[in-house]
Length: 438
Image (tube, rainbow, N blue to C red; front, side):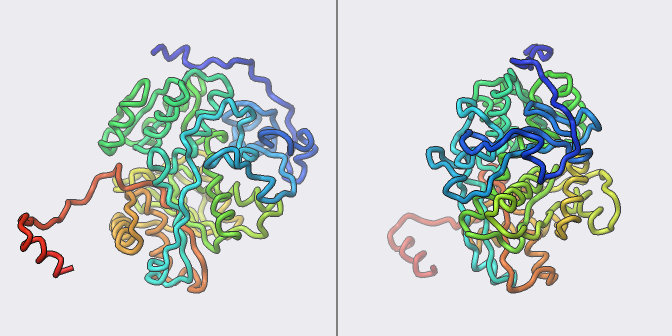
């Protein structure tokens, strides 16, 4: 594949005028009500300097280089008017997703994942109620499918002819699958110690599958530079605001199912995509009058890669850190780029919490989840649950509170613990004796 011709926009990029942003001024900066349109998306706003831009594929502010947020013209509304049951999964919420033409949607039915009450786990942790948002039922078994759908759909919307991502496993498998579905070539980079099942998945789906040695942080800068040069559409989590929008539908689905927001909302954090996206979802619902409060947001990281937790707990500015090996490969990021400070700012502005868990705590959470609730999730998938268990034991959350943990992946694509079975004979007498011990 000739990388210098991978990405060509169908139309020239045009930048809008800039102006200082205030959330209440959306109607002044952008056009009027979008209630009859497929998407209410209006444009882009710089999180740092407030510059406003027309709707376009743009990865950073042209004024200051800051992170960009998508802006929607959000009316006062209700669930009946917001959702569209002509679509399935997360695309029921297409009005608050950044795809203007339904013909550009690339979907495999992601979203509408199970919200599972976990009463036995709640009792063992010492809290009133616990819900698990189980993302393992998405098409590739991971929460990444939500953002792969919005990323590949956006790539089609803006005329990209290829998409790329650097991955430790789930993101690469998911993005390659959706790119294949959307008939867009993909260049997928995967950590050389990635899980074999996920790597096989990537090699099957990707147009070009590349294995790298070293850590995620070692490669991402080079790939980001190639993206800035227009060699591919950005399928990564560090800057692309179009990509992470898919995950905010988790907040919408949880709130729709519960009829309210939980007291505590536990999210695993690597680059911070889930955390920022779900925060955006709750914030949008507040603006539309659908909820009256924000849950306490909890940032959950591995002790081996905890730059945000370290900054939050110490009260110091954000600083990248060198990571150590962890079984939770999906959160093994020491330098999340500009989203690291963004997560930290949200935590501080909204009185959130930040917790780091050990590999031993992660493995314990895996076992407890399987034993108590019958769910088998991968190590990355239970980082949020491990943090909740830690918080419960340390009395950091009230016993009469409700909590939600995002379980981000199935355990079926991760390494398995050794199987322990009993050798049996096949005679009726021997088999009958086995049942007497149950």
